[in-house]
Image (tube, rainbow, N blue to C red):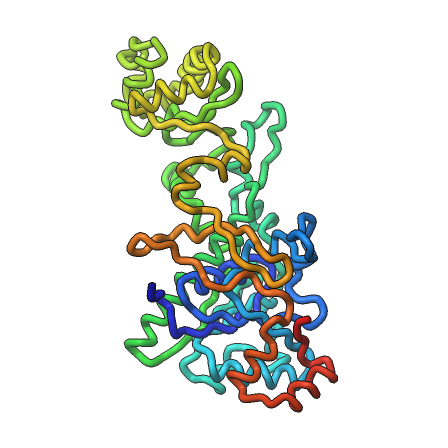
Length: 406
């Protein structure tokens, strides 16, 4: 199938997660993404293991976020390397970078410098705190931003309960959200450029994104003036909407309206609860959650998780198990949707990856290339885009300006 961003070329100067996630999303949508890495070491996440891909020293972390890219190893600290990047920018539509504010200016690779090379360039900067403000100079990492941006104050067991310290989310969601917002912004900028002929500088900050995705919890605070507290697996605005223990494990129940609650009560053998004025509406259930939750929990302890799942699903009550990842990838719905895919890898022979969840006209949008080995495409890209001959390329390699694979 034709891909939406076919014909768009992206120069990805980023590393670790937020920037590379943005680049991977653009690659899955059809863009040609050229990943610039340090000769000899590459993206930091190449060493973030174990686990490693079988027969290689490629970390699972790196593989998770670099599908669809061509790796070109260039030393940005070398003036000749900087000149190569400027030449490549002239052949690209988009630059993505996540250096500290001002970090690329000394190399002549900041937005203003590269705009002189390509006036309609779309240049996306991803930082911890943005291009301005009192924290602009500081480095930012997902874990600390989850704390600073309020997410950890909402995640974990209630204060005073066993293990009640604030908790981070088990996946670096702030980085991932930032990568997705960056990809969204880049696509909007490409659309605008089609209409105006102008590029621009996009400024994405992890802290801004973390605050931006607080969603209903942010409005709970801004509306009431009361900071929300940790509720464990319970929901601040909906009851019952949490995990409950069963005879052999746990079950998530997510009742979204009063009709679903009435059906839940029938399955539990407690139909009178739906007529109790303390529980008849969601607002009243939220007010009296401390009374209702133990009633539901006591009922659910009477049977196994799978038995409850069958009964509740038959009654149209939204519910689900808490799966470990082995069960996730064996789940029939996950398998049917093709969320695990396999690609050919130049060193391992095969690599298992997670599919992009977007479906367009019934087809999954996944890039054709597997995550690259370090410098795998240096020769190909420099010869094709910059018309570099073998002699010039060999000299740059001799000087350590360019690295290649193997």
